[in-house]
Figure 1 (tube, rainbow, N blue to C red):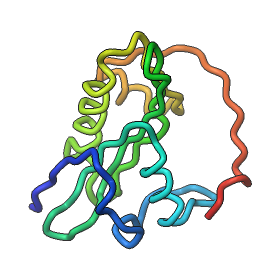
Figure 2 (cartoon, helix red, strand yellow):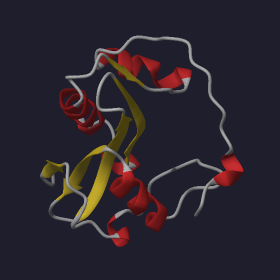
Figure 3 (spheres, one colour):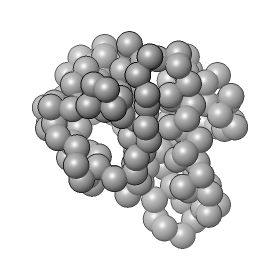
Length: 136
């Protein structure tokens, strides 16, 4: 089993290390768009398989720097799921945002139990998803 290392800096990451994400999305973002997302997020944690030199998971967050943060995305490649990587990514991000009053995220009901195990609790939310606005 490959060793997974975690990093907050995406400066050395290239688009070719970001393939295989967004499984099931009707219009998935390209690896180049994912790279932009990682660079432009306020916070990020990457899970990297050192043997494969590939990013196998990531989490991103946006924040106002004072009170509120928002976890905007969490992805783990299917071949690496059920190994604790997602939980480790969430734990590291929650630690990075520990100084904030509120950390929010929006997720589908089927993954709410995962986030509850990470210490979060359900809450109602409002969203507008424009699935055709993704820049592949």
